[in-house]
Length: 222
Image (cartoon, rainbow, N blue to C red; front, side):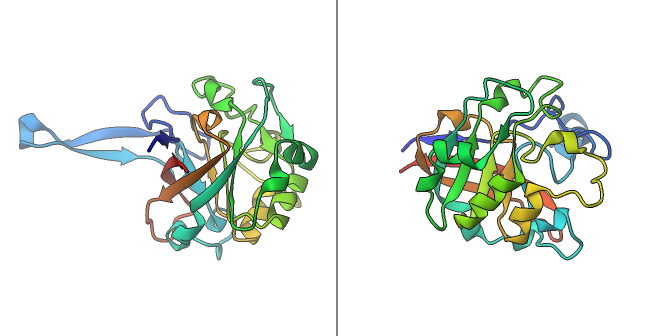
């Protein structure tokens, strides 16, 4: 059985969203020379690398990472492919979803968006020019009753809407999914290599009260 590793390697060169987020870094707390063993402190945010976004990211009373049912982030997934050709701000509309096969999504499926944007993961504009889905597309997928959403980009809302402060009154695809209880996984890698249907797992750390969590995402051939 082939298993696809869909998580980016976490190291000090990994992208991050900028202020108020912080880049990943580590320091030694114990060394073989001084202690006979190694222990390191890892400093990262709940939205580091390939990660889960849940309702707590947006609302004080939102669903936390440790409350997301495992059944939601594991199961049958359908891969929708988009030839964004590394085009900046590539917005995916409902019509584009249907052309990519979204009409075949069934209730309880996980929807994986594969754009190939992860090829630019080490470039400065990886975050700021990310592909995204429109609010209308989020509503379309919600109506298809998907149980989770995943994408090989660091954003699924328009990055031009801003990062550090969300303007009042702005409608985001994130809101559509989180209000519907649909967990989202961002920053996949190698999604374009997947077959059209897979068994997907995107398991977060069980961090109590967390607004998100790094995940080890993987997919298996059916």
